[in-house]
Each structure stands twice: as structure tokens, then as C-alpha cells.
Length: 218
Image (cartoon, rainbow, N blue to C red; front, side, top):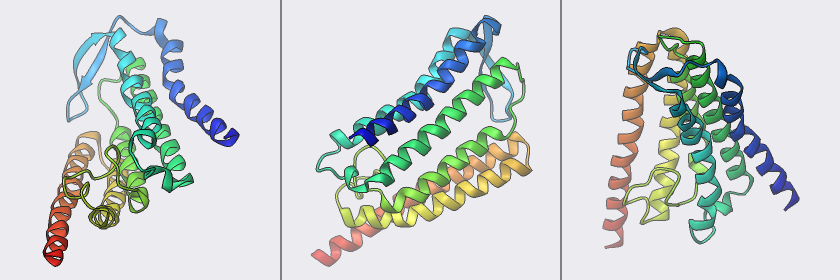
């Protein structure tokens, strides 16, 4: 219990990082700041700086809350069966989202008009990390490839996530590499294509897998 408590303290500190950073830079920010960037990485919408608080709320804080409550309400202790692997996944995802939120705030502070390709790279890293843990992820309603067919069957869930894990991991790695080689606009387009591929293929696979299993049962 004491070890788990210490782990949650570290997670809470990581969540707090972008909030603390925003407090530090708050007075130096203009009242009107960039709030949205288009696919080319160019700021195309501005707004009141108060809206910046939604960045750390929507990224690390919301992510942490989902990971925190998911094992409690998932039922049958499915996620708890992952043990330390679930804790490592939670820590890693919270860390990446916290870094992502902090970097976006840094971009706003520095008044960078065109986003660098670091952001697609961080999202690619998130894909790769999730893909690495997909094979050990237990059936639940909150984290993973949630289709009507994976949620009905542990076998379909396991098969789908073992297959999807490879696509998500290598897809994420490709995005990271492309973010290092190409400018933001190209990296984002590659990210969108890969995101579509690694989303659609597992959905189709889960349906076909469920259909094959149902036919064998009948």
C-alpha cells in the first residue's frame, strides 16, 4: 500500500508540471495567445490566455483520472490483473501527455507561429508506447481497442490487441522517425495516415475474428 501511495505521488507531480509551468509564465504571456494550429503548423486561431488552462486539464489531468478510476469501475478486477504493467503504462502515458502539454505552453510563450515537428513525434511516441502494452491489456471499457466484438469476447480482445500492438508500435516509430526527418506539415500528414491505418485495421480484424469464432461455436 505504501509503495502504491508513493507511485501515485510521482504521478501527481508529473500531472502538476504543466500547471506549475503555466503559473510561472502566466504574467509574461500576452492577453491574446495562439489557441489552434492548422495542419501546416500555422496558428489560425487566437483567444484569451485563460483558455490555456484547458491544455493541462485535457491532457495529463484527464489521462491520469481515467487511469486512476478505470481499475475501480472496470469490473472483475480485469485491469488489476496486469499488476505493475498497468502502473508502468499509467506512468508512461501520463508523462508523455504532461510533456506534450508543457511543450504546447512553451510554444505559446515563445510566440512560435509555425509549430515544429516535435508534436507529431510525441504523438507517435504515444502510439508506440500503447502498442507495446496492448498485448497485455485486459478487457475493459476505457483503455484499448473497444469494438462491439472485442467487448463481447476475451478471446477476440486478446487476439485483436496482440495484432494491433504491432501496428501501433511500428506505426508510432515511423511517425517519430518522420518527425525527425520532415517538417511539421509532412509529419502531420504521415501521422494522420498512420492513425487511420492503425485504427481501421484492428476494427475490421476484431469483426472478422469474432465472426470466425461464432461460426465455430455454432
